[in-house]
Length: 242
Length: 305
Image (cartoon, rainbow over all chains, first blue to last red; front, side):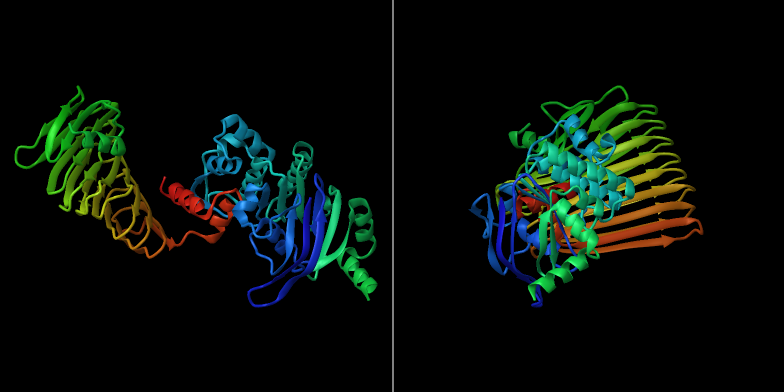
């Protein structure tokens, strides 16, 4: 289980983004974190992966306090992170990146299997450099493939739908469903997309730096659909808090 | 042949106890092994140090290796090698130079290579430079390459300086004929106080001639590199020059690509990008479990591979 206690984070200029946030993510679930832009979702995801360091609070993974661990150490503990805007590397091939992710040299067949899962015609891509000759959609799929190769206990996807075409998006839904079946770990997906919300076990609404609502997906979807979407949830929550 | 030469040969060429095809091994300015083949004849020059390498017209899938090694300080080796490639050939030339010193004396190799590539021939030229040893003597390699490409020929140059060379000035000049193509891929790593200067001057003289010049370099510590390319389009042609450099610590890189279009149908492009390793690249590799140092080394290895 991932447990976040009293997490706060400010931008370098001092703007409060996360405010004393508490959250528990149970093992083996597909949890979608949603909410309005600027509400703190991506910040929360980056704090989990160790990319950002929280101002206050504690992070526990399976009972171990990982608050002080850096990105590398958290990755070694089984946390993976798929970037919303993947980076390009001149000179590093798709094969090299996937092998770095898996931690071992891989046979062509195994590489192809991973790349096929994200809709890439594998043999054409294995020896290609991850540079500007690849489209945004291709880079995104390779990013997701690199995370799949890790088979982590906890995988965080930051807006995986951003920058990919409709066909790839449909394929992505299948990827998440397969991951849920094949990997026994936990998936956290930051997303606004209704189709991703629909496949969640749990939905968490983050807005204004805090958790505004949280619950099983079917209940949360009903609330989201009947209260003017996420903004409705937020205003309803604020009313309750008053 | 000395043990140091054997070690250097493994680094700079595909030597694994023997060479495939014709070869000439130069050690401290002298020849320590030479074999010609039926189609590739290697002879010593009479008027100056160096070789003439004659590749017969129509020679296919053959390799000629001409490595040069300097095994100790106080050697200043100068060699002039001329390659005459007949028409319709398809060959690989493996050059390269290794310099070793364990003393405070400088060690230098200066190789002047001229290529005359016949009509419709294809030549792949591989050149790797390295410096080794614990001596404080300056290790320098100053290669000069001149090439003349006849109609329809292709010269593909893959050059790398993979470390340990304190000073280098690399000059490449080429004249490219109609329909001929020159492809140059250069990789340079400098560290500590090393310096590297690269000069390219390519004249595209024939209709549909072309050059693609790609340089990737990494300047670390207090090292400094300079890149200057000149592409002159004297005919309907295509020219592309790309200089990518990574700087780290106090490394410095100066890049100055120059284009001269002297024909209305000359299409010339240059690109130059210099900067640190992007922080996002390090972050991505760290999320895969690499330390910051491992991530940086992985990015540099890939960039120069």
